[in-house]
Length: 314
Image 1 (cartoon, helix red, strand yellow):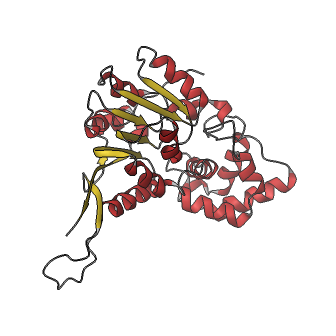
Image 2 (cartoon, one colour):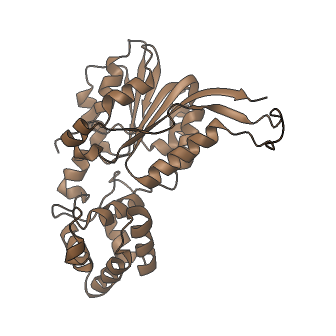
Image 3 (cartoon, rainbow, N blue to C red):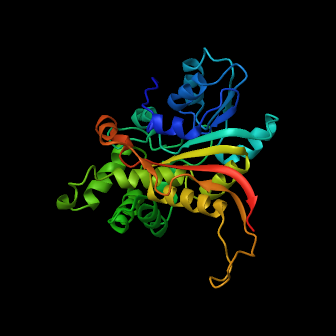
């Protein structure tokens, strides 16, 4: 597989990290190493980059791309486990963490991975092909109600009930094993007049991918854990591509920032709420029109930034 990937909002993310040459940084979603390359370029020999990815093929490709930089440590793992990963590396805290929660271009484009609705391939969709359930498992074993719920919550698919019904009807006749089969079921479930807003399978494939890789449920706690792993003044930069992802990240950052719970009629705060820092931008950073035209996958991207600075508020 040839790994091609244009990093989304590259300059904005690098600027937001405020990289220190001698600092320790984590790319929790190493992928094609587009962001990592720009991070490590800014590090001195004393600096260090920890690259984490669930995809072994991504790690291998990234190590080749970054082979001229000896201060990179590669970890096959999940950013949800960042606290344990850093503990295993004997690192107490880091200066910055980047999480790019999107699926990499090479994963989407590789037929055998089953992410793409544009080509035929096995129903897999795992980012880590060494473990976990596959899209085939989801499509062939989940109940009609479970499928409908996933398609609606993770894909915002208006025809979720009809698609789920037809999936269950089809699998009674034979097991659904390929992306082409699933696409045909989806296309036959949505009225032709309603198939003008992009590919009709886009939302269903997104929803199943999120379920297969458990992308939403741990995210709130992951953001909390990442901030706990930062040094004072360290920054967490997160790129999301889905409203549920963005909501989880936003809520976690707001909770970390803390909020006074005192009655509004008190002249000053007495609750002494705990704050772990501040949200840097009230509104998320989005891609410019030029980047959206150049890289369509940046259209739904949002970047949120949090800076750690512990304090008890009096």
